[in-house]
Amino acid sequence: MSEKTRYSDAELEEFKAVITDKLEKAYKDYDLLKAAVMNTDGNDDADTAPTFKVLEEGASTLSKEEAGQLAQRQMKFIQHLRAALVRIENKTYGVCRETGKLIPKERLMAVPHATLSIDAKNTNKR
Image 1 (spheres, rainbow, N blue to C red):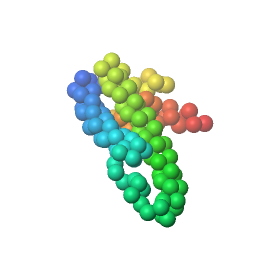
Image 2: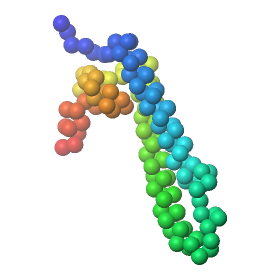
Image 3: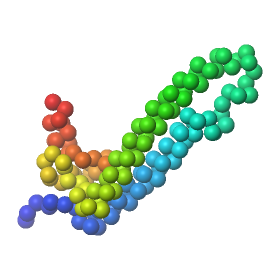
Image 4: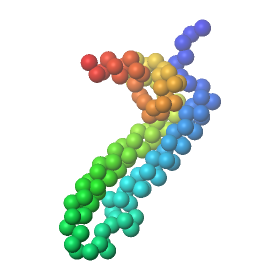
């Protein structure tokens, strides 16, 4: 029997469902982070007494910076998931971009936006 060169349409639909679920959660997380950066969640120090305001501003700024970095990272994750959906539509999903072989299903279930097999990824680290 010859080696599979791509996943079946049924398998691609299974991956699509996993990615869609992760994408939905990722968007919710992104919205929460964006709200933290923009102070739209109502948990700011606007109503704090002036004495404590100076102490809180430093922590607030640091917290906003962290939330901003997390939001950027979350958006990058969303972009990777959306690109994976495009690969599903093109029927190229799950094919290692280095070796051209199928990435194991277990890896894709754990990291659905993966474009490299473990072997290819380890080779690139060296």
